Image 1: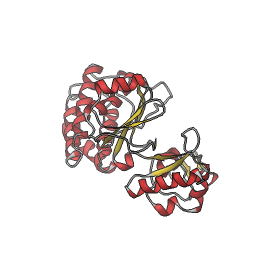
Image 2 (image 1 turned 180 degrees about the vertical axis):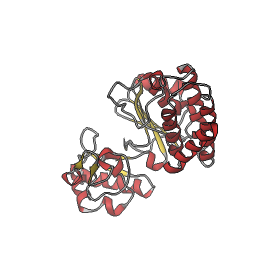
Image 3 (image 1 turned 60 degrees about the vertical axis):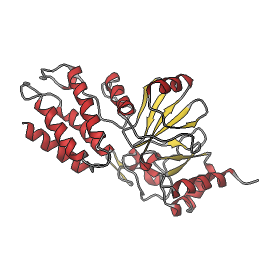
Image 4 (image 1 turned 90 degrees about the vertical axis):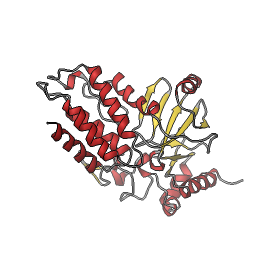
Length: 295
């Protein structure tokens, strides 16, 4: 009888050939742990750059599949090298990086979450899971856990378990899905000294603006609409749209005594632009120039 490892490797190679970055998952669906070679040299440096914090994808000096989603690869030589083969022997499932394949997974963890999605989310390809379903959309966005009861968004800086190709036609991301993360941020402000379990920036709240004359709802509604405009430019024009949104939003604060928390707004605009493929430095310049033009 074939070893389960052979089935996992076969699935991994097939996914990699289709352009889907893969990684081995241990029992319990977690990634294999980091190795000693990737330990931190200091509080701000490590042998793998930002990899232990899972900030950047791609290879590191360690040949093992460390750092969860960031280690996912489509390189068949890497998948079949000795360190990865050792990892496959410990693995119990194949994981993949949705964002690396231009996908977003709406992870519905139970029947109630599935029922909610069928009523409120656009239909797309679905994959049955142990307790619920994965709804897979074409396009990327920031990831966030617990955007509502039993619902996680897995895309950029996240991995998902491979459970088969699913059924149905895959559709593009819409604002109905994208705004789940924004609404989750507004409903879950950062605790003092804490961090959200999300790859998105901290939400704009009154505590970041001591001299803003606008209400929190006015700011967050305007920011949500601006982010949707940027994310709608999936193929082209996102950089120019980012500049325009930044200029418009900053102009609303010209009469405020300030500060108005524009750095927090800027972080959201940059994250939205990079989620649709704008290089980080270009997105940063677009926002900075937009703010300068408004001033």
